[in-house]
Amino acid sequence: MTFLVEKTADLFESVLGTRPSGVWSAPGRVNLIGEHTDYNEGFAMPLAINRRTAVAAALRDDRRIRVTSSFDSALVEIEIDDISADTVSGWSAYPLGVVWALRQVAASPESLCGVDLVIDSDVPVGAGLSSSAALECAVAVALNDLWQMGLSTMELARIGQKAENDIVGAPTGLMDQIASMHGRADHAVLIDCQALTATPVALGFAASDLVLLVIDTTVRHSHATGGYKDRRASCERACEALGVPSLRSVTESDLPRAQSILDAETYRRVRHVVTENARVLATGAAIAVDGPRAVGELLNASHVSMRDDYEISIPELDCAVEAAQNAGAVGARMTGGGFGGAAIALVSTHLMDEVTEAVLADFAHRGFARPEIFAVSAADGARRDY
Ligand code: ADP
Ligand code: MG
Image (tube, rainbow, N blue to C red; front, side, top):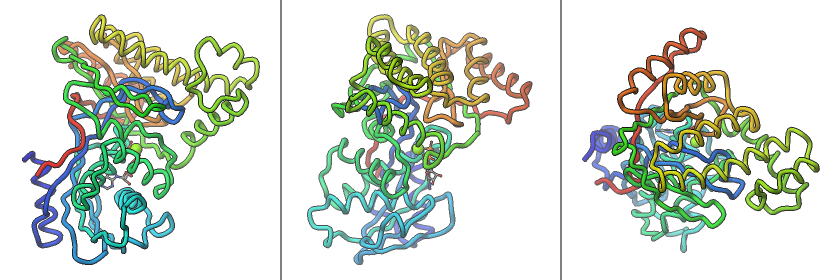
């Protein structure tokens, strides 16, 4: 048992007075490349990381759901049938949203037992590492086992997304949940968000003496409000104007026509999505043919596209990326939905300290809050731990 799994089982016992019947966990993720492409039915290439959210759980003999998190001392209680977007709020909307979404697809919802859920995590929250998907997927695999629902990993990913869209109210895509469900050690996951397929891509970072650094700016974002929703709306408007079902059908050769039809801002949004899809596929090809050091320019270009065309970067993210690049990173980009959160830098192992120091120094020089910088490795997806 890992430290986190043991700690979560112990927390269950100290809060509820009994041992859980099991502990399940799911990882956060970083997106190597392919940002804001998931809801446009495009391509993305995230990796599950060695930071996880664990849930200790046990069935009850009534129909109550009780949930608590190491986050918060409150024990939230609700009847299974009473869960709706109006009755739940705050962090518990994520786990309770998963309960709600599973109930929707259950063969006989009236026969589902209640359950106690206790959550602990070492995924940083709101950092763009998808603590939300880690939480949803951990709860989804736990309940899939306890309620013996027999859903596939892809179905469970969709349950997590449904919880986040319909109960939390954040219109996020499916990338994070697929990464958290399908992750594999030392692999990224190439996701085709139209076909809904997840293909492991061997990374070989360690074998090439590379380390993937996360630079968490500590600037927090929210996907339920603001810019994320606006970007989605722009893409929907663009599809209508272009007469396409999704931006997946638009390729780089269609861009001149798109430019002649769309206003300048909407066109920039489309150009990001279209070129980002191409960069994801190019990244897969580059790794396969030339190894992981060949992806640097694609990461750098992705950042420029997010900064200038999609306009989702912030000065702290630009600073992190530029400082890492100047200190010799193979490539760097902001990762996640934007407006805060983290950047990633792919760095030669021997330059790790130098890059870290350079980023810290530039942040201090610019008067930004000190970022959290740590290495991540590609880890396995959601599973039962005990
Ligand atoms: P991100 O997914 O990038 O970390 P989100 O805003 O999508 O950021 O999700 C963060 C939210 O998910 C938190 O504000 C909280 O409501 C919920 N959450 C994540 N992890 C936990 C946890 N361990 N316990 C309770 N709630 C959590
Ligand atoms: Mg999230």
